[in-house]
Amino acid sequence: MASEKPTVLIIGGLGYIGRFLARYIHENDLASEVRLVDKVLPQLAWLAPEFEKACSSDKFIQADASKEQALARIFDRTDGKEWDYVFNCGGETRYSQEDEVYKVRSLGLSLAVGREAARRKVKCFVELSTGMVYKPNSSPSKEGDKLKPWSKIAVFKLQAEEELAKIEGLHLVIVRLPHVYGPYASQWVATALCMARVYQALGEEMKWLWTKDLRTNTAHIDDVTRALWAVAAWYDAGKANWDEKSMGQVPIFNVVDKGTTNQGVIADIIGEVFGIETGFQGQLLSNLARLNMDSVVDDVNDDVLGPWADLLSDAGITRPGPLTPFMEKELLKDTDLSMDGSRLEEVVGFQYQKPTITKELVEEVIESYKRMKWWP
Image (tube, rainbow, N blue to C red; front, side, top):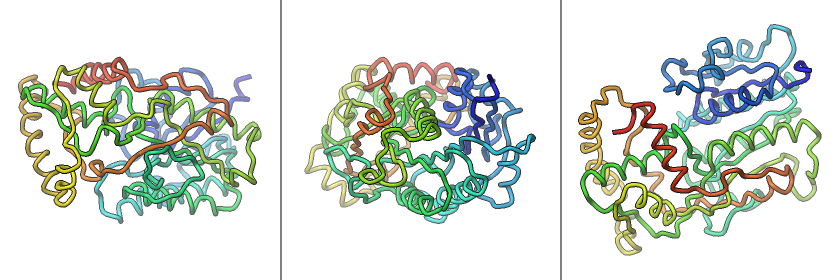
C-alpha cells in the first residue's frame, strides 16, 4: 500500500545532494509524500531537466529553515500528521566565509530544524556532516577516532553534531561525507576540471601542491543518496546490529568509496582525460608556499581566471553556470581527508555501486557540464 511508504522532508532540497536525493526517492517511488525546502527558487538553482519532476513546484517551499518563524510552514502538513524522515542537506557549503555566516546558516539551521524534528517526534533525522571533522591522518579515520576539524565548515558542522546529540527525543543519525562528485558537481572536482581545461588550453603542465599521496577521499553522488536512504530506513526499522556500548548512542556513519582517492589518483585521471602533463611541486616548494599561502592562491587564481573567461567567451557561453577554476585557500592545505567507510557496510549492509573514482566517471561529469552548456 502506498500509504505505508514514509513521508520525507528534505531541508536544502535544491542543493547538490538534496536534489539528487529527491530524484532517487522519486525514481524509486520510495515515499508517499516529499517536500523540498530551500532558500533558493528552483528557477535559480541550475536544475538539469532530469530533476524537473522530482523537484517540481508542488513539492517545493521557499523558506529559510534557520529562521524560527519559518518552521511551522516548513513542517506543517495538510493532513496534520508529522514527517517520518527529515534529511538536513542544508547549510553553508562555500569555503572561506566569515564565522558568523556558518554560525547562522549551518549551526543555527541544524539546531532549528533538529529541535523542531524532536518536538514533532520525527522518526528519523539525518544530519549531513563532513569527514573534515577528523584529525588529519593518512590512515583512514573511523567514526570513533580523534576529532580536530580543519576547515571552517567542519568546525561548525562538528558543533552542530554535538549540540544535536544533546536534544532530547531527537532520533538522530549523522552521516560524514568526503568530497562528493558526480554529474553537475560544482565543487572540488569541478574546480580541478576547470583548472585542467585552462592548462590544456595554455598547453602547460598542471602541478599540485604537496605530494601524490595526500588523501582526498571521494564518494559518488549516486552512492551518497542511496546511503542516506539506507541509513534512514535502517534506523526506522530498529537499528539492527547497532551496539550502543561500543559504538555510542547516536549512530554515526562515514560514507566514502573504497578507492582511497588521493591527489595522485586525481592527477592521473585528469592527465588522461585532458591529455596534459600533471605533476607535484614536492615538499620544498610546497613548504615555501605554506609560509605565503595567500599570495600563492592569489597567483594561481590570477593565472587561471582570465584564460577561463576567454574560453567561455570563445565558446559563446554568455550565461556561465556554477563552474569556476577559482581555488579556495582552505582546500590547498596539506591535510588528509581520509576516511574508513566499513561501518556502513557491516552495520547497515550497504554496498557501493561506484567503489572508485574512474576516468569514465569523471568524463560523465564533463558530459553533464556540456549538456548544461556550462563547459567551454
